[in-house]
Image 1 (cartoon, rainbow over the protein chains, first blue to last red):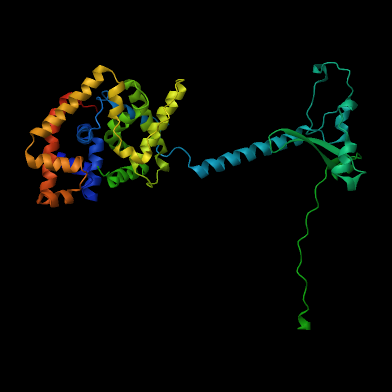
Image 2 (cartoon, each protein chain N blue to C red; image 1 turned 30 degrees about the vertical axis):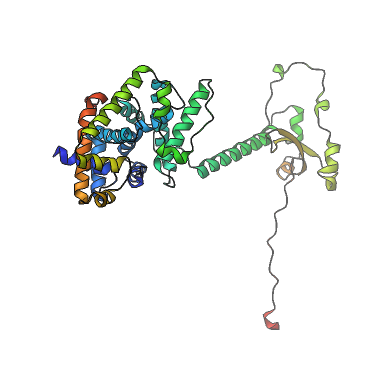
Length: 215
Length: 199
């Protein structure tokens, strides 16, 4: 029986076993340590006959690999495939960029009352007692809006601009200016609320009406 | 030279990809000596060689999902082994050799040639002893067994080709090759220290 099994292993090692018996034997050899060692020695004999000898491997060489693979972190094909990893990398980059832009919109004051020190929703509150005294005035830190007005909103000179730090393609912060327009909800409170200018929604193009009676 | 058995390897790889982790053990046991020999070309300490070979097998297992069977499994494994060895040398602050073997020649590569020059005398003695036993056992085999195993392992003929060359049925070829292997195995087993069976 043992010889018969070993003869099958010998044929299997040579790739000369039929598909079904080979599948059955592979399952059996892979679960039986004695048969697995026989399988390994038959291949070693081939190596020796071809002059591909090497010193004996340490005891339990293959067992150590099997045990390492039995840990939960191991898994065949766990490394993401090329397209999947690229997609994930791009999606991650886009998510980071979007979150930075949202954070910038939330942190930078939008309304004119925020410069007066009052805390408004969406404006970062700063404890005045923690701010170190400085000779700089608040006006000195304001960006030069006139320069931007020539380039960004030349057609809307009368409108104020909102400075905004956004990440550029190189991942560095870049100062841009968004033109502001009058908001709707601020009018109810009697204050002029400004919000970033948003493009007007596009109107769907209507196909020209054909007069059925002209045909 | 010896033709590989891509069907056996591919079948085992597909089983691993289907979730049968045990099938990978057969690939490890099939190529463990060959891959460690290749790595010994880069790393001269035999113990370190075996560590890197084990790491290479683990990396291969984890990357097996990407293996499509376009190349032979051993060629693919060989590349992983060489890259792992080079990374190991770089991590240790050593410079990897630049005279690479082409991956296409990996199947026929005799890694032992390099080992003979660099390994310790104990390991070299063990290797020589193994070679001596195999050679002596094959020389002592009956002619039909010696011819069958030589045509298979050295010349790489299929069973059908051997049956034509020897003028006997394929079943006889299969039996002769097994008997030759078994005879060599009986002599080799004590040297391998594989009598102790691990669960």
